[in-house]
Image (cartoon, rainbow, N blue to C red):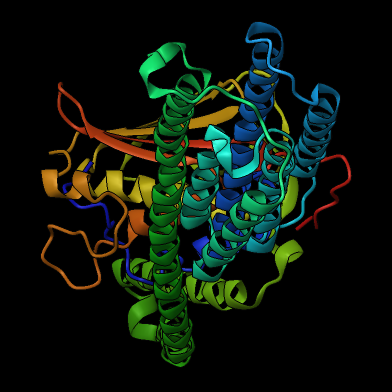
Length: 466
């Protein structure tokens, strides 16, 4: 494979429409939601709500353990039935929260605030029954404040601060007394001192464990947002290239038609008809002009076609055979070694974008290895794996580091470095992966992995037969 991922074909021949067409045609088949800021925020909010559900389960078990130890272990009289009723309500709320996580409804900041306030209300009810503000576990309010500061916007965090402050103040005035010996000289044998240590350890452990996990969720969200912004820029780049290609195709239509007419007139000239070599030259020129016109027509057709207008029913093996046959016809000087190990054939949707994508990869290999190129296809689980190998000098290190980014070319010519950029966008839109590496025995390998679900023909689909 060449040290340039761009391919040597002109812009018209790289078919800049590939990424946008693949997205429109197959985007819903890949089983992956679009990488948008709203989708990323939704995923992060779901994870944050899951963290609160897990924390609440720990709180339920911790409260049950504490209630039983205090009542039966220390022999302290507490309203155990009322406390267990509060715990039961918390369990019920958590079960409902788990069911809500399965619903395809966006998790809002208001919902996270409401979940935190439910925890605050349950803690307030329990403290009201066992000593109020004098209970050492009153410091658990700080955990709710910390979670609010991490999970919620500023207004939500201050609401939690205000409500927890009011709860502590209310507990200081209205609460059932809890008779506990409170002599610091008793050390750890004093139930109050032991409860303070347990509360401190519990808060410290939960803060470290859950805040770290929540921060990891937020960092992941930030990374995904960066990727989404990069994808938007790339798609905008592809759209601009498509507009340029379409405009160029319109401009080329007239001169190509003029050349076709002139060559047709030349063919009938007596001077040319008398020379077999000239007749052959004119015939070759007419074939090349016809091919150029076909490319231009294809670009104009692709720019305006809808989803079903370019797709058709076929099978994986037939599709691959057609791609190979078309490429061999265009590149008769190159020996393409084709190895199809896909196995049992499967129905699929064929689209020009897929052919253009594979054509770009083969064209790149042809530039690096003009005499021979290898193409293999096989099935790996639920994926179609395509591998293109050449005998060229291999990729330059800087190209491998930024594989698939536009204009990463070492050929020193303007307009290069677009081939694998377009291929990568098509592959990503289909939910697949693109890999490239240099081989120890020489040459390079480009491997494309596509999920069969992205191209498979569903039973309810009826694509247009072209």
